[in-house]
Length: 468
Image 1 (cartoon, rainbow, N blue to C red):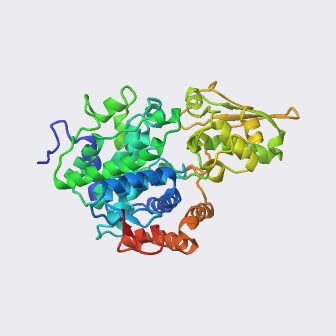
Image 2: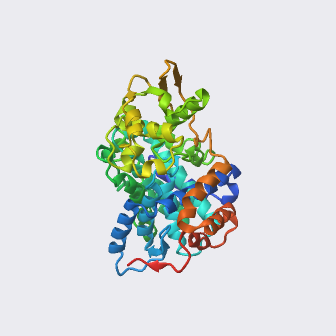
Image 3: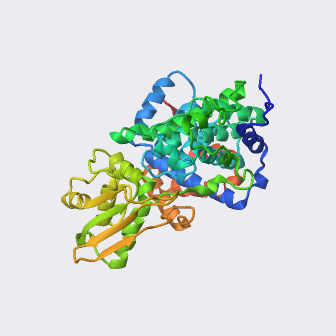
């Protein structure tokens, strides 16, 4: 039995579901559809590159053991194995986030919780490119709106919640509900079911544990499972967000939640527009400072040897999250202000090769790291990033603060920059020909009649096989 609206009026999830269950592709703004295709090719590239990472391989082994004896035809990106849909979503979500190259904004990393669901359900057949694009738009919209209702990224994450895990489950559920063609009642149930089992905490940062990479995969699995349960008839709490006791906002964001933000501009403003793409293979919180470094080095014409010291002026959260001299893993380097600035100054880039095998023991990297100080002496407004102060050996001093780092919605990657990123990530795994086919396929996705024509391009050439 499915319940309707209470005497209090429709709940937040019911209002979201009513819009997105009936929204038509023809009514979507052209720029939103174009963004959906851009984030899709960016995300698939990140997931394909991350498919052979240690953490993705671990999750694949665990998923294969869990699936033993069960049939599954959903592809695992960059591999030939197939899995049941929920497990494939879990593996691919982990792979997409494994290298810190997936998109940002929204719920934190919306793509890694939404796109694996779309790929996983493609195996059911009967879905086309327009279905995929609508699912992406719905998923990104829900994932971002839930975080906005929780008070926004900074308040939610400062409480210790990893928003990709907590809010991402709602986005995954919405994408799945759209693909499963659930009506508004069951769509709302899917959101309610997902919200009762969402989670993810920042404890991984203390020791570089792999669980950060797994959070999007778990959220994707959770959201897809929730939608499948709703499709089968399970009800979910309609006031899962705003319930005074046990609601998502009262439990996860007490005192900072802004529930009214959840519905702001619904149907007029599409939250996919608030997601960006990463040019650098590290936490997005470091990107503005990296841009400041590159701008100062270009402007002064110096090399790393001329840098005497640097001071990063942030707030208490900047220090807690990024003040890190002990590097024991790739994740440590991707969350270390000192390490990221040091390797960027020496190499002129912050690409994956600078983080995949940490360079912290190299003498010049070590020297620079120990000459970089992260201080919490500024009050940063929402959306504001730390300033970089640089002292040169000749006595000169410079300071730079970048408002919109490269890749932000306000400063997006160009088509050429995105194409270069995609090629650099996909070609080593699938080859140049398949990379070009994939790019062309996504560019005309709205014309695709069978979404499986896309997912076939996400694996190496040859026959896919069920996971052992």
